[in-house]
Image (tube, rainbow, N blue to C red; front, side, top):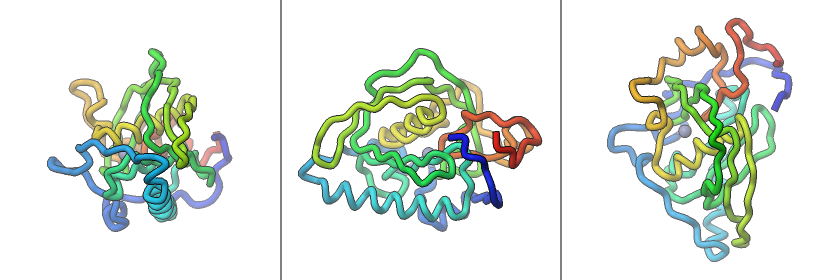
Amino acid sequence: MTTPFSGRLRCGSSTDMRTLDITQDSVESSLRLPSTDFGLPAEAAEARRTIAKLRQRAAQVREIHTFRTGMGLAAPQIGIHRRAAIIYLAEQDDVITLLNPRIQEQSTAVETRFEGCLSFFDVRGQVARPVHLLIAHQRLDGTQVTSAFEGSVARLVAHEIDHLNGVLYTQRMAAGDRPIPVEHYRRTAYEVTTADASGSRGTTPGSVGSSR
Ligand SMILES: [Zn+2]
């Protein structure tokens, strides 16, 4: 999680995400619909194909944008309304794959941080998320597993599971709060854009490029 950042910061825009065929939000967007489970292991081949497509698309997105805290991509964001999502931690290549994930337990303790979403990437908004999550999900062979996540990873996981339920982070923001333009966000509290769901490693103004 604390891999020192090196190299050029890449900054993608909403236009870039649309070009990569990441579904963009709109009032009647299919992103507002819940996705269905894979029947596993019967649909293992379909699930495997979906994961491969997610990884391929995520690789394209990561080419054009630097995610310092991590990034996630959910199947509905690439037009597949099935319960699959992947998560990358910062600039690492290890991927967390979630099939049919559901929140089993969540901490009452929450943390409020800025998040971004590839489906409306020109703004960032503050969202309170549980600090700890216990997630029930499945392997391709149908085995049920439980995984624990915390901090910024828990935030990414919660954001992606929301996508599978047809929920966007804007629906999780405090009443009356609104997302701010990404330029404003970069200029103020959190200088560097981070992730699809992001921000747990708060950077202070002027700390662009620090390895903190
Ligand atoms: Zn998102």
